Amino acid sequence: MRTVVVLMDTLKRNYLEVYNRNTWVKTPNLTAFSKESVTFENHWVGSAPCMPARRDILTGRLNFLERSWGPIEPFDMTLPKVLAERNIFSHIVTDHPHYFRLGGEDYVQQFNTWDFYRGQEGDPWISRLDDPSYMPKDYYGKLRKQYQWNRTQWKTEEEYPTPKTFASAANWLEDNKDHDDFFLLVETFDPHEPFDVPDKYMDMYNCTYKGPYFETPTYSEVDVPEDALEYINKRYAALLTMTDNHFGKFVQKLKDLNIYEDTLIIVTTDHGYFLGERNYFGKNYMHMYNELSNIPLLVRFPGGNRAGERVNDITQNIDIMPTVLDYNEFNIPNEVQGKSWKPIAENCCYEREYALYGYHGLAVNVTDGKYTYFRGHNEENKPCYEYTCIPTTIRKYLGKGIEEKIEMGRFLKRTNYPVYKIPIENPSIIDNVVDGISYTKENMLFNIVEDYLQTKPIKDEALENKYIKLLMKGLKEMESPEEQLERLSLGKNC
Image 1 (cartoon, helix red, strand yellow):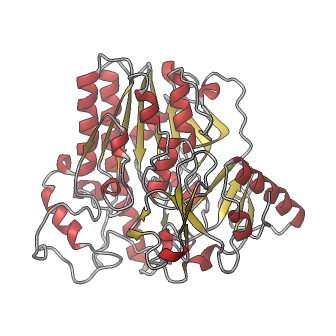
Image 2: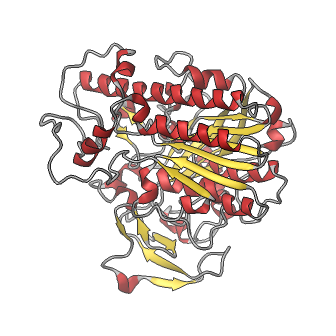
């Protein structure tokens, strides 16, 4: 079985015509692909943001209940390694720089081969001691010297990392078109910030902005004037349109090679993003409203099963691993928490009661597709621990300065591998946000069928108790560390 997974970072569902007929953003190739695929309405994140989401995908398990942003663990059973047991070749082509920074260890190494295109965001690529010639003094948001140097290498559109990534994936298909068994992960950092894009794409959106330089919002409440807010939305839209353009070329390559019809093709993202909605920029520190958590999923099943249909089954990215294994006629390992989508393709019985999702150390969230429930933490946000063999995370090492409080033992049910149990004072993903935990203390319940935009919180004790029970069931079934119950003011035992 040939499998292709396309992962575009930071894909905003409400900007896609597939999900919003009234959008002003141009994504014709994703729209065209959706007509030949199944569109999933109830697809949810699991762990967020970037690396936690990728560990979900590669292991078929939720990362965020045990730890934050971090590496593949020695005891992880990953999709590429399981496929390799039957000589199914795996390859990843990516321009995602977080695989090669602290906390991103051993992801690409799971694959037989990997290909990486440099320069996105803060990737330490172009090495110069001097400031780049283009460093605006007047700007909004963030301005990275490193990125300003990196972008000097892209004279044409084809030299940008996303076009290079899709072109490399197309070349890989050309080289391997005669083989029936492979797993290809095509991953673009775009449309993640910085929203850097050739001018021709900005011209599509009639941009007349004359204000300060602005390509990367600061993760905060909106702190720019209205014209800058409109401008940054257009920059995101332009970058999304460029990404869509090269995605379309990649899909055409599959068709030209006559391997489109019998290939399993999955297109999704890791999370959404705020571009002014609810007066927020970015992600990570706020509650996981639908703008972040209800994400796009398009699946072209082999033979075009159910092509053009929309389904409401609850799904998550932890399902990718069991789906691929199922199509390759593998037994799904017991430790995998996701569910195969093959029954959906075949119009057979598929049952999933809920999706559980969140950031490590913040609120834990649950949905049954009708309601969403955000369960905030207690005032101290304790007890809170990370469980890991490799104590790296984004920007730092875990446990620095509290070494005497770190325990080591066999704390995880699924492995005898000893792990560190590291106390967390401030969740790693918001350690650069002032009073970050204050944003997610409140419990909130929404009816997302009648109130998809989640503007009308429900105060109904009986209904909330129903979703507390569903949340606790999810914590138990997903093998959450027991202290999560105490941290979430749910008691000490399920």
